Length: 213
Image 1 (spheres, one colour):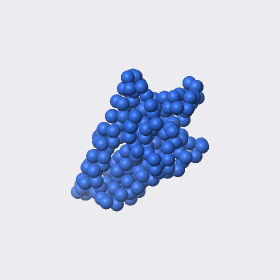
Image 2 (cartoon, one colour):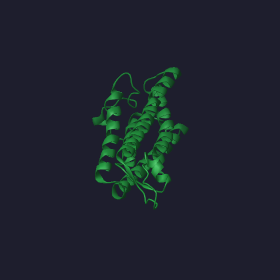
Image 3 (tube, helix red, strand yellow):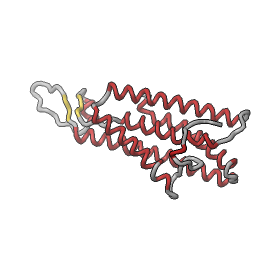
């Protein structure tokens, strides 16, 4: 159940993290005013809207594929003709088992969330905040929480890989998750009309994903 709402956990931690780090960088490093800094924050937060759309569309696609390719296994009652089921939900309502190609939504979501978190926390190597300030404490707490969440996602990914789905379903889920990450952070977010990369726009080869300051 924790994994089923994985995007919600990721969203609610990244929301304040992106807001605080983007605003602070815009004010301190780029010397933007409050209005321009706020607009930049809103632009970066659009990445969470994109992530929500990716999650919604992909999970809907997975359910559609499973319904399209499946059939219901149900012990019929004597003297009654077999019933045809149009969806997995109808099958489960009659205590049946739906056999379809179930692309691993967990593998998709966990890989996508983990890669998105790594992209966003990379901004910390350019952020300089007074160690005694309350803002630094809040950012540190959010960083620790995001790192812990990433560890949880990796652990649950391994559990899914060991105990659920077959190899093709897990592989396809991971490929879709990585494609969603690559298509956004490595392609679309490089374009002017996009949420943009985390500030500052550091080339991927120089990203260390560390909080070195």
